[in-house]
Amino acid sequence: MTLKAPILIAEDDADDRFLLKTAFAENGYTDTIDWVENGVEVMNYLHGQDKSVHPAFILLDLNMPKKNGREVLKEIKEDPELKKIPVIIFTTTKNEKEINRCYELGANSYIVKPSSFELLLKIIRQVRNYWLMTSSTPV
Image 1 (cartoon, rainbow, N blue to C red):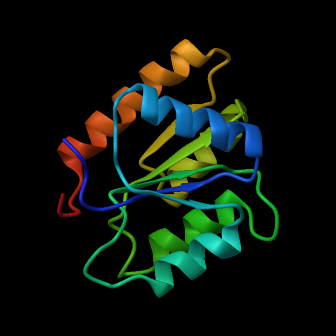
Image 2: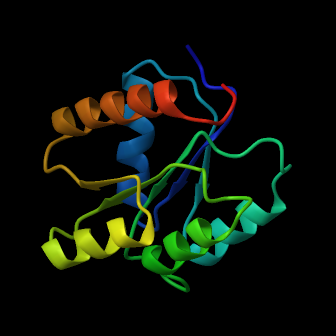
């Protein structure tokens, strides 16, 4: 099943973008994925969208230029129009204080980037299937 709503992925690292694209393709997903490379682009994307179609979910890196993931997460969750969009933090940061901070800001999930491609395939399957089933965004 292909999502009708796009998935928004905010990732500034070209290698990580390539791995994510490959993981979606190898899992057989043909979802529309919109890519942004920094926090300013995330917010421009969300504010420039048709208000009736929000992303099914956002995969958000924490460590991005211009505006980091924490700032973006806070802005999304404080915006009445955007706060229902599921935001999954997808980062290399394993710090417990950071994880707790993201949940306090409203993150729906926090995933540490895996060390192997096989694990990335599994994580993408789990994240996509879970948020496909629970998303309030029309699919």
